[in-house]
Amino acid sequence: MKRFIGISLLVLLLAACSQDAPEATQPETGNAVDSITPEQTTPASIQVGKDYHSFSNPAQMKVRNVALDLTVDFDRKVLDGSAVLKIERVANDAQTLVLDTKDLTIHSVEAAGTPLEFELGAADSFLGAPLSIVVPHGVDEIKVAYTTSPSASGLQWLTPAQTAGGEYPFLFSQAQAIHARSFIPLQDSPQVRVTYQAVLRTPPALLAVMSASNEPDAELDGVYEFNMPQPVPSYLIALAVGDLRFKAMGERTGVYAEPALLEAAAQEFEDTESMLIATEKRYGPYGWDRYDLLILPPSFPFGGMENPRLSFITPTVIAGDKSLVSLIAHELAHSWSGNTVTNATWRDLWLNEGFTTYLTYRIMEIIYGTDRYKMEAVLGFQDLEADITRLDPNDAILAIDLRGRDPDDVFSNVPYEKGALFLRELEQRVGRDNFDAFLKAYFKEFEFESITTDQFIDYLDKTLLVTHADVLDKARIEQWIFSPELPNDLPLEESDAFSLVDNARMQWLGDELAAADIETDSWTVHQWLYFLNNMPEEIDDKKLSELDAAFDLTESRNNEIAHSWLLISVKNWYEPALPRLHDYLTSIGRNKLVKPLYRELAKTDRGKALGRQAFAEAKAGYHPLTVKANTPFVE
Image (tube, rainbow, N blue to C red):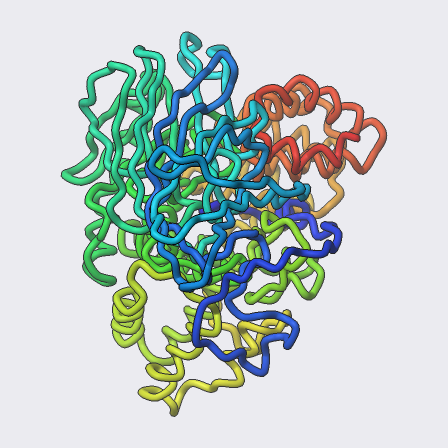
C-alpha cells in the first residue's frame, strides 16, 4: 500500500493526513465478518467487522468473481464496457444485490439477456452511490453495462506531454482505499474477495497491464486478456495502459516502464529477486506466481501500491544508488501481509501496514545489513513521534474509528510505524525464531482471508499468549492496539551513524565547523535526511547559503533530500531555492513529497501566492487524490 519511507521528523509534522473530515451519517451496509465478539476495548457503538465505507450487502449476496470487458477511450477519458458478476446468495431469502459505484453511468443490468430491475441511489460525497439490483432466485450471474466518468477518482488519464516519452497517452488506476467503485460496479469492501478476468481493448500501439497474469512479450494488438485466479479484495484490482516495455530482473521478477526509464529502473531495483527469496525463506512460499514492478509517471500520488503480481511504483525512488529501495521491499512484503492476509475494514488497516512495515525492516536488514536497518528504524520512529504529536489522540490508535470519514484519512504513520513497533516488541519478547514461526503460521492460517483486529487478538490468545504467557501481557497488547499513547520501555533502535551526524550538525550550527569542512563523503542518503530533518525551525540566510554552496542542496536530484531541503527553505524563505521549489511542485505529484510543501507555503501570504501559482500550473497533471489533498492549501 501507500508507503511513508524515510520521511523526516520535520516532514511528518506537516505531512500527516488531515484530521478535519466532518462526521456524517453512514448507511447501514449489512456486511460483517461472522463469529467475532467485540473485546471490551472496542467501543460498544462499533459493530466489529462492519464496513462503514461500503453500501454493499455481502452478508446477503456476495460477489465471487468479476469478468471485465472494457474499451479504453483516451479521447473521452472513459472506460466503456461491462462487468459480469458471479454471485453467491448467502441468505436464502435475499432478493437484492447492492453494489458500490461512484460517478458511473449505468446503461443496463441483465441476466442471460433478460433485463433486471435496478436503482442507483443518492450519491454521498466520498462513498459514491449504491446500485441496488433485484436478482431473481435461480440467477447467479449478472451483467452490468456501464461507462466511467472522465473525472473518476480511481483513474488518471495523462496526455503524451505528461509522460516520459512524450509520444503516447497513459492511463493508470489507483483503487485504494475505496476508488475501485469509480471504475467498476462491485462490492468495494476489503472483506469481499473476488477472482477476476478481464479483456482490455486499447489503441494498438499501447500495452495494457493489470494486477493479474501479464505476458511480458505480449503482441501489441490492442486486445489484452488477464486472469487473477487468487481471490483479492477490490482495492487490489489495478490496470495501466501506455507505451510500456519489459525487462527481466530475475527468474520471477521484472519491471515494466516507459522506454526512457526502463534501464535505470531495472538497475535500481535489481535486488528484487533477492528480496523475494529472502522473504520466502522466513514466511512461506510466494503465492502469486510472478512479482513484477510497473514504473508509473511522476504524477502517481503514492510511493507504491502493492497490487498483486504487479506493484505500482513512483519514479521518484529511482535515485541511482538504491538508497530508497526500502519501498520495493515494502510493496513486496505486502504479498504476504495485506494481499494474502487482508484487513477486513479500514479500521483494521494496521494489520496490513504494520505487519508489512515490520517485514520491510527485516528484509532490508537481510539484504543490506544491520547498520542500514537501524538507520531506517530510527527515522521511522521519528516519523511516528511526529505524527502522534500532531494527530488527534483518536487517530493515534491502531484500531482507529473512521466512521463518518473518508477512509483515505487513515493513512498516517500510525498504522505503519506504530504497528511495526508493536510487532518488534513481540519479536523481542518471544525471540526472533519463535516470532518468525508465528508469522509464518499466521499467514498460512488466514491465507486469502480478510480479518479484523479482534480476530487477530483472538489468534494471539490461542498462540503466543499461550506459549509465551511468561513474557507477554494481554493488557499491554491491548494498550498497543487501542490506546493512543505509546507504552513505556519501547523496543527502539539506535544508530552510531547518526551520532556522527548529530555532532557535525551541532558544530556547524555553533559556528565551530564550516559547512565545507563537514566530512560527508561517506554519508548515506539516510544520514543526509537525518542531518536535514533535525535542523532547528529557524536558520538565517547566511547559514543556509553556506550549506547550499557547500553541498548544492537546491539542485539535489535525490527527491527525498530535495524535499527536506525545500521544506527548510520554505520555513525560512530562502529565496535562491524558490525557483527549484516551483519546478519540484510542478514536476511530481507524489503526495508525500508535495503536500507538506503546500501546507507550509499556506502559512504565509507570500507562500500561499507561490503555492497557488505552482498548483494552478500543475493541477492538470496531478492525480485526483493529489488535487483533493492539496486544494485546501491554495484556496
